[in-house]
Image (cartoon, rainbow, N blue to C red; front, side, top):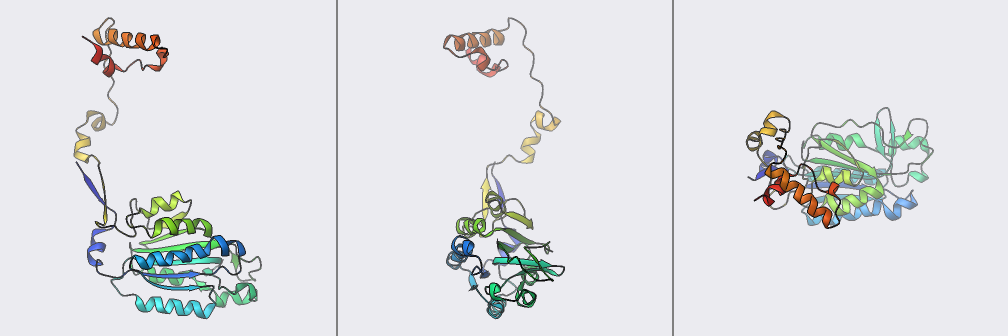
Length: 288
């Protein structure tokens, strides 16, 4: 039998089938030469692929605080209650404190460390927006190296994240995230959670097996699997253990045929140990 596993919740797909997907992409890498070449720009490059999939994208690169606020404002204006899916990608250096985590602006290298808290973009802002779209919202965090001096209020890197129910969070080094976004994120039908882990990315929040962010033509993944009723009819499964194989009497036809099979194998140069001693299925076919 064929078991159809829905990769996206049916209720969400039905209610949002005509809604335009929306994305916010912020990539800041000016203060990190390595990731400026290999990480953040490749994350930004996925914008064209998102637009090709019908996304309305609000994007800004190497932005200061004001430019990030404008990008967020455009993103909020294009959202509506039926938007699905909804994506936020933040790439760059992160810092954190007791109040949460923040993405540094593109000019952080020119900024006084004590000014970072007022100029950075709060990750919790993205979480608040995405919480409105449970099971159809994804936050991607591409991390680069944060400045060593982050002042007395903040520490380098992402801190603990408070993830709302139904929001998927994928995070990792910008170079790894770039490979993921380029090859997987914008591919219809790709199983997002399994693929993210294959790229050594951390996944948290809403992470069901088989979750597809961009459904294909059918919005479902079909696999050949036995149904539970079929499995229950198998004695070994029903009893929870494998049933013991019946013992064969010395000199019986199966045993004689098995010995003959082993003798032929040895005669052809194959050691007798290579023939399973309890493989009565093959032996029975040779019995008269």
